[in-house]
Each structure stands twice: as structure tokens, then as C-alpha cells.
Image (cartoon, rainbow, N blue to C red):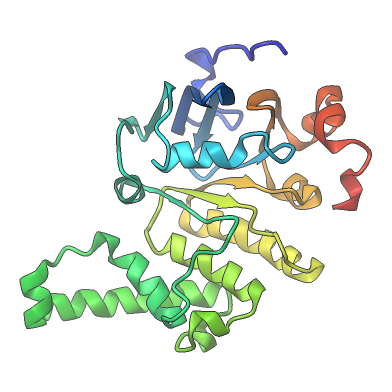
Length: 275
């Protein structure tokens, strides 16, 4: 398989003509003798909505783990708003502006829906231990704003009426929604969604597609989406990157990707319309 062409300086501007907010340059990682990701590059603009697709085991979630500090790349560099992200812990990367969801839902099941969101929002809490213990006026005001924002985020996904229920009592589809809300509560610049449509019924998928677009437009957050539901990806993504065996085999608009022979052979086949 041929090596994908290097990204030139001119190509740092994305297909939308915007400067890259998230600039990934030739990152790679190996596990033993297995090259899980090779020479992966991506320029995601502010408020961009891009998709990352490919067969199981192609390296998609590994890329998310590289972007969020779970793994340190063996090669290449990652910049967020011109800040080089190197040797950062996951919570530091979240604080810098990259938030994610997971294939397997990772909520706090024994906390309320509201508290799951509030905890995420406390990442940017400016008050220290003493202010918290004394419950100063500044602390109380910040907590009020935090709770107000949490309710506003829950309302986007019609979860405000479930705010005081335990997260474990929510249906699977609502837990998926809550995980996205919790990621948004960290006030990210970039939101990484790892198979958010997994396990959802067709109506829930339609609502999810609309919600993702609304999130991008309302919060001006860039979204990078891993998803196997091809109709959803083709409907909402501006650009799509296709991986196979850890390498990029195609990148382009939904129409360009859908008609690429390498993508059809490696992944899409004739089943694109089947979801």
C-alpha cells in the first residue's frame, strides 16, 4: 500500500478555506511489531464536522487515544490552536480543549444525571479547597453558573426532566446522549465522538444527527466523528477520512469517498445504503 502524500503548508488550510484548529501531522504508533497507525495527518478547522471511518481494527479509536493522551505517538506531532500537545496527560488535554466520548459508555452510574454533567464542568473551576470548604460568595456564584449551564446542556438533548435521576436508570439511548452532554460540559474546542450511534434505533439516529449539527453550530465546536452508520456519516460530515490497516486510503467529501474504488473495496462494498 502506498504511503499517503505529505501535507504541505498550503494544505494546512482545510477544504472549507479555514486555518486548522486541530493540526495532526504524520502521527504513528506501533504495538510490538504491529503498526496500528501510520503517518496519519488531519487538519480540522474550527466548527468543522469531519468523519473518520474504516473497517474494525483500522486504527480509528487508536487515533482518538493518541489525540487524548491515552497513548503517546511514536512519531509525528499534534497541535491544538497552535499549542503543541506533547507528553500531556488526558486531563491536561481535556483542559486544553479536546473532549471525547467512548465506544463503551463511561458514566458515573450511581450519580445523578445532573451531577455527571456538573463534575465534568468543574474542570475549569477556579476556586480552591479553602473557598470550597468555606462556601464563599464567589464559590456559590460559580456553582450556580455551573448548574445553570448543566441544565442548559441537558435541555439540548431533552434530558432536563431526568436531571435528578441516577444515570444508571436512563435507557441506553439516553445514556449515549448524556455522555455527549458531559463531554460538552468541559467547554471543548474539539469534540471527538466514538460511535455515538451504536445501539440506537433509526429514530434515535435521526435525532442524533440533528443534535450533532446543532452542537457544532450553537457552540462552534469542531467535531471528529467515528461511526459505522454510513448514512449518518454521509449526511452530516463535510469531509471524511478513510482508514485501512492503520493507513489513510482516502480523504474527501462524502461523494468523493463514496465513489472511491479503494474505499469500496476495503470497506463500503455494496452495502452503503444498508446503514
